[in-house]
Each structure stands twice: as C-alpha cells, then as structure tokens.
Length: 304
Image (cartoon, rainbow, N blue to C red):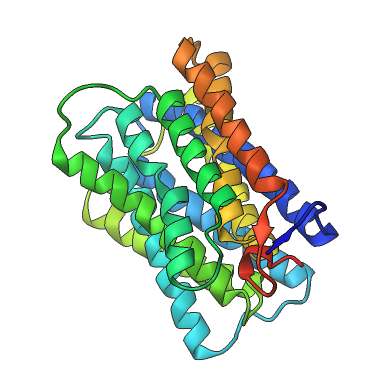
C-alpha cells in the first residue's frame, strides 16, 4: 500500500479544473432560480445547458485538433453516458416537485458514496479506509449544509433524487473507464450529443420551450446556462486526471459555493448546522486531495 504525499502536475491540473467546475455548478442554482421566477421552465434550461456544452466541447476539439470520431463501441458508451446525464438533470428537477429542495439535494448528493462503491465493484478504484472516511464525512457534511429535514417524504421525490445521483455516479465511473481507452474530449462530445437530444425530446413532449419574461430572469438564465456548461465540461475532462472517487468528493464543494452565492444573490441566511456542514465538506475534500492511498496501476491515480 502506497501513500501519495505529493500530487503530479497532471493531478494538480485536474484538481484546478474540478474547483473551477464546483464554482460553476455552485453559481448555477441561484441564477436558475432567478430565471424560474421570471417564467422560465427548468427543462428549457436543461436543454440550453447541454446545447452550450456541445458547442463548447466542439470548439475545444477543433482548437486542439482532436478527432471527433472514434471506435463504435466507445461512441455507444459515450452516448449511454449522455443519456445518464440527461436523466440526472431531468430527475433532479422533477424530484423537487414532490419533496423540498433541501431533501432532494441531500439525496442527490449521495452520488460520491455511490461512485466509491461502484468504482470498487468495477475494480477501477481501491476503497481504502481513508477514502471511506472521506466519503462519509462528505456525505454527512452535505446533509447538514442543505438542511436535512424531519418529515415524511413523498417516495416519488426520494426515488427521483437518489436515481439522479445514481445517474451521476454511473456516468462518472463509466467515463473514468472510457477515458483509459479514448480521448476525453471526443467522448464528452458524443455524450453531449445524446444529452442534448434526450433533453430536447423530453422538453418537446412535455412543456415545450418556456423562456424568462424579464431582464433579470434572462440574466439569471444566461449565467446559469454558461456556468453549468463550463462546469460540466471541466468536470468530465478532469475525471481521467484524478479518478472518479476524488473527483466526486471535490465536487462536493458545489453546495458550499451554492450556499455562499445564495446568501449574496438571494439574501438567504445559513443556519449553524449549515456552517458545520461546510466545515465537514472541506475536511472531506482535504482528505481526498492529500494523502490518498492508492494501489499501483489503479485508476484512482489515473493522473499518475
């Protein structure tokens, strides 16, 4: 068993991308709420986000001269990942129709624990004692930071929220594995094609296109759209650099940033338990970033 005391340059780049992604993900919810209050429909924003992601990753591929075509089996896996991403976005948004947002968020953020378990089962990452501790500290921190309530929840919302988290976990593990065989940019490109197509189909068959009806709503819509698109692309490009488990743990910075942005933009006031939760999440991220145990050749150190 080897303890890594220093990060390689590849891993440092990966963690920097993940932190930037967490900022983008954290900004997006508050801005989306501004858009929703002005009449925008969540599914319209989901489709817009994935479309911008597709445009962005296409531009990156051209700038770096990365071919967009690869083996058929990898394309099919990437399309599957895109479907999982579309399910995640749609499922999470649907969950809040049945349960409070705080509970939906808490259930959704079980995905880092799910990533650790799925990675271990698939043989992609070692589930060491330190990593298990980090996973559960992060989970406890998320529960506190989003304000986990005490009430009987509608099972439909519970299933949708946990299912959305499972979609993120499965897509993270799937992508980490695919990235060992193909180019990350190419794979994200095909995933975004599927995510855009599926989200457009769901939107078209349900509520149709519904956009904001005032200036503030449009500002929120555009910021949420571009922040999310940047964050999603950065997150999946960073996955092969640091591994799925540590990426999922670092992504838990999102609720911390989301709370801070909500305080500034929406004038929300965090409670004491939320502050405790933020501290726990930062502690878990520290455990994930420093002193992570890894076996030689494991994808938990894919950046090595």
